[in-house]
Length: 206
Image 1 (cartoon, helix red, strand yellow):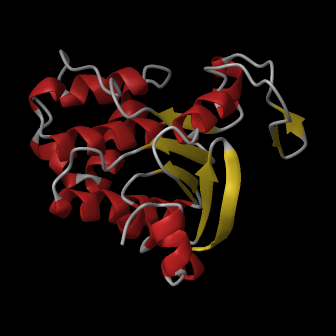
Image 2 (spheres, rainbow, N blue to C red):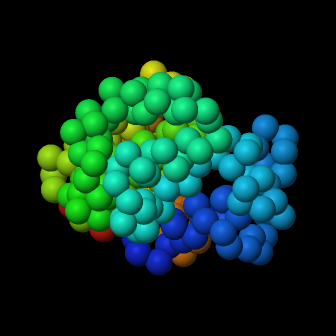
């Protein structure tokens, strides 16, 4: 599911509110009958929700492998090594960069690491804030392809805030368009892509 809209429409705030990082001033947030408002982020995480912010989403001074091990610190060594093998099979570039500091990775590689760290928590829902920001077109496609694969093969629900509307709509099933904190339009990705009025009026792209 994509969350779209112009700057200042409340897209990133929505994700932060779901994850308990900012206060909710109206309405409810409910997951399978369980209210999330008032829960600490740790409690929300235990409900199976992972949040990947746009910035500061990896530990830059640590190597790729150290980042992965930190995410797996609750497992024993054998379990952690198995999980790392699974992560590097899904994200081969991380295996190639295992001993490189995360701060030295390219933007696309860093985003892959951030997604892998979220995935290692084995969430049911992943909240991603502008995963394509600052990436080359090649890496944008690679990131969205990986998210689609995680969705299809692992049954993870993706909620992706994006400015790159046309690109994300090619990979997602459904989208909400926000305007000034309200849902201005919602529908299937195909419906939105084919609705030029919505694309130009609400998303500001031609």
